[in-house]
Image 1 (cartoon, rainbow, N blue to C red):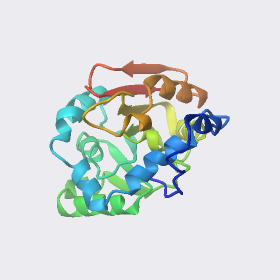
Image 2: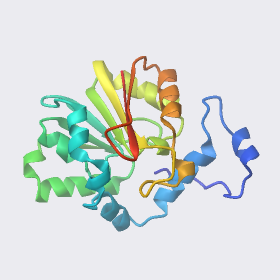
Image 3: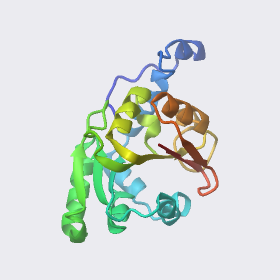
Length: 226
C-alpha cells in the first residue's frame, strides 16, 4: 500500500507504544505492513492473489454465501487487488466498484474484464482511491467489503467514518482479515490485528451493531457491522 518511509525496524517496543496516536493506532505497525506489500514485485503479488491454492483457505464460495443475496446491489471492494472477490460478486448480480490505491491492479482488472469477462463490463467499475479515504459519495453503496486489507489502512477510525457515510441506511461493512496468531498463510503475526481491536475501532467509527464469525474460515474472522 502506501509508500512511506519505513521506520527503523529495530525500534524498541516501548518506543513503538509511545508512538500510538489518540486513535489508538500504531503507525510503525501500519507502515510495516505497507512496506512489506510494496517490497514485492507486482507480478509476484498477482501470482499470490490468484494462486488456486488460495481457494482452500479463503473459501470464496462460503464467503459468498455469507455475504447473502447481492443481486441488484452496489458493493465497493476496498483493496480489490486482482478482483478475486470483485468478479465473483459481479457474477452474483452486484454492481461492483473495485477500489485500490495501486493503479496497476485497476489496470489489471480492466484488462481482465476486456479480455476474459466481457459480461462484467457493465457491472464492474474501477476507482483509484487515495490512501486516506474510500472516496465514496454519501449513501452510494449497499455494502463495503474489505478482505485482507484492513491492517494496511492508517487512521482507521477516520477512514471508516467515511465508509459509514458512504453506506446506504441499511448498508453493511464486511471485514475479512487474519486471526492474530501464527498460521501458514497471511502476513507475520505483528502485522495482524485481533477481531477485538477491529471491532473496537469500528465502534469508535460509529458502527453500532457487530457480528463476528470465527467459524467459516480456518485462519480468518468475518466481521459484519452496520
